[in-house]
Length: 587
Image 1 (cartoon, rainbow, N blue to C red):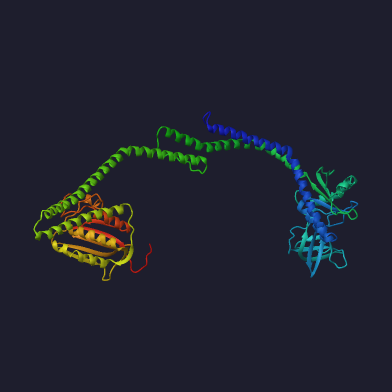
Image 2: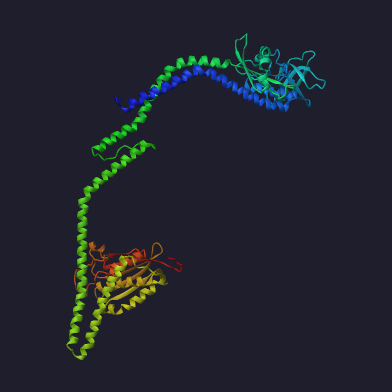
């Protein structure tokens, strides 16, 4: 332990505190334990006497019930007691008895205490057990038997003049033997009562007021001290009775003497235990502090590796978790700072790519608008210069056609803007995807024939496939994908549109053409609004790059799984829609 460490301080303080408390407890036991025991014992007896007085008034006049009540009181409270009349003479009550059932008759066997010994009290008595008693009947009905000898199982020959009763025990109350001879103590009641009566006149007023009178009496033969308590049981002086209670105080004196000797032998053991436990306690309490101190020292050196965590639910555990969190956060911050330059450079490159795409889009749109504007201007000037009548209609048709192309481009730009600001709301309904595909296929007849292309439509089964979606938007998707497939297909080839059931109650639609494949690095970017695979400005071969961007927004609003892959002969675009077999959907 360090000289000024927290472990040594905790050890010294804990040891001193425990030893101080132990010394106070020992002094208190030596000085006050006996007095405390006496007071507790007397208060307990006073409460018991008060309870007895209530029951006494209920059974007063019934000698048998009163005797049973008195015997129960003595056994429960470990006392010798007597009931006194107004002249302080002891009532002739025999509290102990055994009741037997013999020959269809109940016989009471009172247990005399005068001249009796502990060995003369029957043992092993229980309700329902058999008992043999030799004695003399005391009444004409032969229901009260004065016992001479108790037998359990085997009995000697019956003495002359005695009666033998064999029966089963139905009830009993016997003196209980504890740390002394109860019969001997009961025999001392007369002697103690005689000494107490000598000074009874001075205590009458207190008894009449209902107070419990306390005193002490010492057995002249054994020297044992007894606590004596007397209390009035009735409220009138004419028929006043008293309760006389005597309890031995010998156990407390012996306990105090043994305790003092016990402390002498126990003190070194307690001292050793206190020192050992204090050392263990101080180490246990200080261990989290030492761990936190080492963690703080590592943090001070910018060592942010994992620290040992204190797994407890107290303040130490919370502090440890906070320090570990701080360490991880600082380590993460440093790692992020190291990657900051790389991330910044990547952002710059991404911004440059976006700017390049924007420039390409502006160039594409400018080209798409410039060419038709030039054509319109040329034909308009021809009309202004008065061309031949046979050319006027063709010039006007070409002007209208180029105007339509410019209008379509502007509408695509407006449509894409709506999708980007989330201003498009779907109008979902149940419709036949099979019917929609067939309708659109027929509308591309002229374009297919111009490139000598064949359109093949396939689907799972012969029944029409129904989906739940926005019909107008899905038509827009199919138009874009078919136009794109026709534009990039080689002449004299086939375009395949296939509809099949996919996982999750969905219908998968695939549009595949035969033609040049898309570079792998471009497959993930063909859906971007600023991206176009063709770098050519040839108006016949490429569009503005807005069609697939619009398709992507429409499909994402439908929760569709979409994509494009290179096949063996060309490129295949696919998307999924929720199947609907007739169920009702609510938005």
